Amino acid sequence: MANPLKVVIAGCSGRMGHALLESVFADADLVLHGAMDRANNPQLGRDAGEFLGKVSNVKVTDDLAQALQGADVLVDFTRPEASMVYLEACKKANVKMIIGTTGFTSEQKRLIELAAQHISIVFAPNMSVGVTLLINLVEQAAKVLSDGYDIEVVEMHHRHKVDAPSGTALRLGEAAAKGLGQRLDDCAIYAREGVTGEREAGKIGFATMRGGDVVGDHTVVLAGVGERVELTHKASSRATFALGALRAAKFLRDKQHGMYDMQDVLGLR
Image (cartoon, rainbow, N blue to C red; front, side):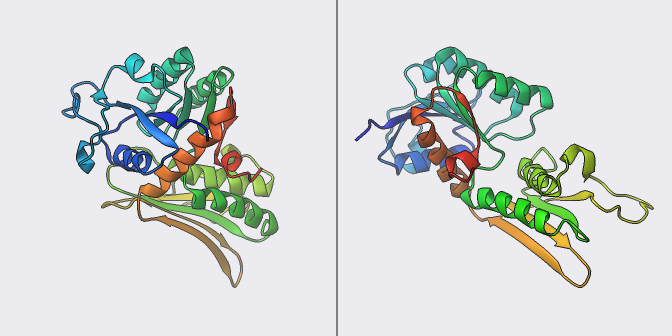
């Protein structure tokens, strides 16, 4: 049996960080090696398992170099600015990386791709197994229903989410565009207001809702004459993202470098 994978979790005191910690503690194939959070966080210096009543012997720290020393993989669901710092540190320490952060600019995505020449990375806007399957279904549906059907992507998240549309909604839009034989940049409509005129064929519309504590709801609507097809995924717990991310971490065990996503992790391509 292989040695447990040594995992570092970024943003460990947040909601997603707690879900990741809980999942690591429950998996015999993984061991918590480091727990990161921002400077001045009140959890710094405390045991990372304290919120679960566990003693992990890993203290929450803001010392990135120390946390990564001897680690196998870092799991990051934070903010783009922090993720870029983690990316450079992982490249320097030769530590693999799971990136579930969303809201990156095109330039930041380019830098992630360059880093993947040196270390192995799974980069996906949504680590859920169900959403990964949904992406495949959306591409197939758009391909089959390319003539006479209008495509809309609707998403809702909690009030604290800072980027819109969500990274998952954009990925679903990319899948639909691919099914249509287009690029999303050429056919996306991100906002409608006032007298917009009739809907143009071949466009992909987005609608964004924010409120409450919604973990993440996504629906792709393919509306034709006399019928519509709706493909929906609803996340009721962050555990689904944590389990997917840790599955991705295991996938990278024997990968020295390269860029991957959840389609690769699940063997869907």
